[in-house]
Length: 341
Image 1 (cartoon, rainbow, N blue to C red):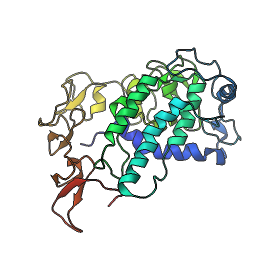
Image 2: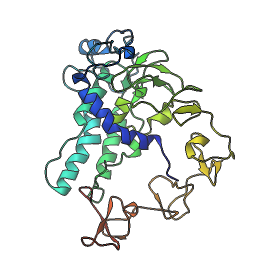
Image 3: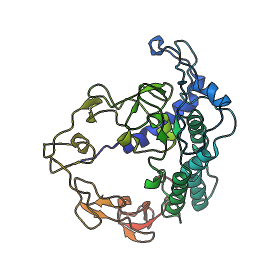
Image 4: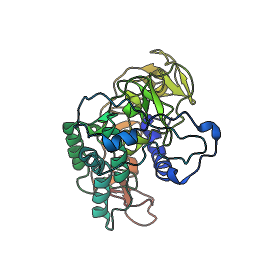
């Protein structure tokens, strides 16, 4: 059975979030109920306040992001930022977006094309300047190095975005306490989430809820900084999100139909919730899952094949299984694919 993860959902909605984020300033609000009482603007403080040092633990600014009022022009939750981007934010965003675009262009020919590095740097810089998040120079450096290593050669090139290495996950750290106004769950400290936030709306840092709606919005900052696993550190629900509503996790050994129903760190194996470790290459898949770096193909965990190795499907290769001839129905070799077939 296909398994839906927070990372999968974030990747599917990332494009929609960027479109909303970039175009919101050109739209008008159509629902008067959508407004809220305005709070002091973080953007004004950001223009006047000095930038905190990377990784600093300075207390967050008491000001909160402004909400869009009824009848007002809709603006992105991360609005205009004055001045050049924060150097550390710009470096991280370049590695996450511009570097893959440049490397792919070098492999496939032509220009790098559109990427979200500038939007990422703008939003992340605003979060840093307003002391809503912190970045560590060392962690950003390790992420950049990991991205560079993962993009060696051309056999990773496919129509999909280049995967984010583990070293790049979880490095945007929130500094806002419970009850603070926020624009992203990444801005909230500890296991708090930004309740009510979206591409054009601010929210409030709160603990995960026991019941109520979930999975209904996109986190703008998590999308542009490619934090695909942010929901693990900032969960919406105390249990899990099932059918757009929070539900209690099933007990260990309980009957299940999906991995998420068993709770974080557990999986649904043979219709029962299990804490079994994910299997390595060569072992049988565990409910369709395998350890990091390997994937499930025909029920077995396998390492992605190298460029030039024989293949019959894309899932066997790091990027794609390239057919030997036009219309060929029998296999091919692993290699890059610059555009969708």
